[in-house]
Amino acid sequence: MSFNICVLASGSKGNAALISTDKTKILLDAGISCRSIEQKLKSVGHRAQELDAVLITHCHWDHISGIKTLVKKYDLNVYTYYQNYGRLVSILGSGKNIIELDGNDFFIKEITVSPFELMHDIHCFGYSFYSRGKKITVMTDVGKITDYVRSRAKDSNILMIESNHDVQKLMSNRKYPQNLKDRIISDQGHLSNDLCADALTQLITEEGRQVVLAHLSQENNTPELAYTITANALKNRGIEAGKDIKLCVASQHKVSEILSVV
Ligand SMILES: [Zn+2]
Ligand SMILES: [Zn+2]
Image (cartoon, rainbow, N blue to C red; front, side):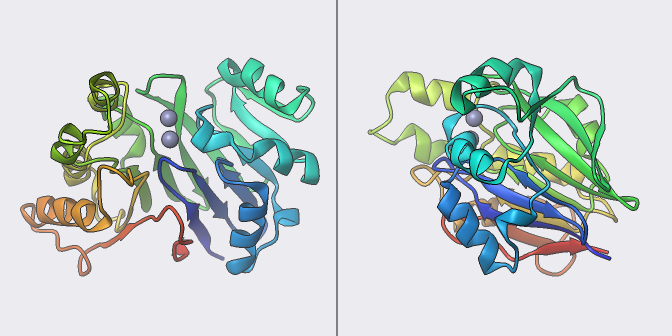
């Protein structure tokens, strides 16, 4: 039996990922249209009807834009932190499908979900998913990796982590006002390629051999840049990307390959 993650979309224009075992299918975030979710799931052999639940990291639009149609069409339960309840009720029109989380671990069928708070400019949560002793962790929209977050993410078999921007590219971007730049690079903003690479040098262990770089800014980053900065940082620690670990970059438009732990 395998335990998988497939990134349907990742980036500032919309996010969604499927965490699955043979019997359990969880959609993490619904920040693309319901139709896109349906099509992307189909492209990897799944159907939206099979989803057991939707889990929300936070209520920025790039993580919830498709939620209303999806939840209504398939009558899905939405798991989210209690701080997001009011916002989600206003989007969904009622609280009947919302299950509020209090920070404790919980189960969705055979997957155990362990939430932990991230530093972002609204309440935002990373999640570790456990099945049969294996661990998949997802943490995006995080300005700073604290010791607490590091402790929660360690020993993940698969780790999806934000590698949002290149600081130089962001700072020289004339389309972005200074206050937006300040917000992005702050501890409550998004993780730069350098901070992501630094975190990974401490998080890669014998068990954690698959990494997905995620939530790349289309304006202020490139997949090549994100990959190279992390690969170089790991190389300095004697870890070779592509050989010692699998290092992938999630795309805004293309569905990722399915990463599995058995
Ligand atoms: Zn986001
Ligand atoms: Zn956000």
